[in-house]
Length: 437
Image (cartoon, rainbow, N blue to C red; front, top):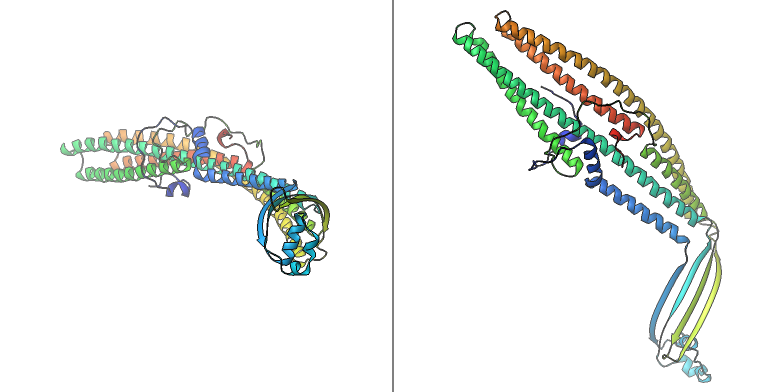
């Protein structure tokens, strides 16, 4: 017998059974535990940290660069030997002798330099890259917020799916006890010759069916608890679940913030636009400042020192690859804009579907409550008439089956109601079950 539907993720997750009792867990605590303990979300946070580091690196490209250089050299290469003596400030008249110039003795030197470089104008490349990095970081952070909300929705499904399975197990155990009691009653009547042996055999078959159903529900309970533990990152959950399945209050449909995936799409569009600006900047001239100082020693006291300063301009007047890259960046920016528009349309569609699903779930829940009242009364009447010998056993078993069907419908409608609420919160960007980071 199908008792309820649950998300395919929660049904397929199977982990070893945990040991030891745990304190009752509320839904709010379960969601927060998933946000902090689940490895998947921690990986997402690492991506956020990575984007932040990349944004910091892009921002710091506007700062000056200081390069220190140390060197030691020994050579008899004519040009280097002459240059080393010149840098050491120890050239003499004898060093211009052609024989010495052409065949110098090996000479050694050690020294170093410090160079400071500062970009003055880069055609907007540096500032555009900095803004793109910041937008990408904010987009990743918004995406992480969306991943947290999606995880919260899955926790809601697994949490209430577990409660549905456990309530179904309680009802199956009640049904088993009822069948056992009825079996004892019919067995006594059969011995007295007041009922046929076939009715007792029929009850034994019903008893076996209930036992099989009980084993299946126990499997479902273990699977859903294991799935919930995987979502939480803590292993199978063994404690009781404190948040009731039946909603205690009417949820608010007002979204206090915009959906994280839509925010991320907008920010990615802005990052792509800044990337296009940076690509265009590569076709413009760049101006930079360079300041430096150097020294070269023959000995500690015998040395030469020098400084320099320069302002330079570089300009790729024509570069086919850079022009192609700029065109590709413009196309990427257009693609990001179109994707952002589509995601907004998709979000509006999801909101409409979620609202309709919630209304339908509320209607099914109201109908299920009426159905279970009617089934309970029908079973009570048929069982009373059967004890008086006025109704056959098949009518009683049919009433019991109808009651179980009504109970299953009630559980399914309650589950659908809670999941529909979570789906609407996710679609609108509202905090799921009121839980915020």
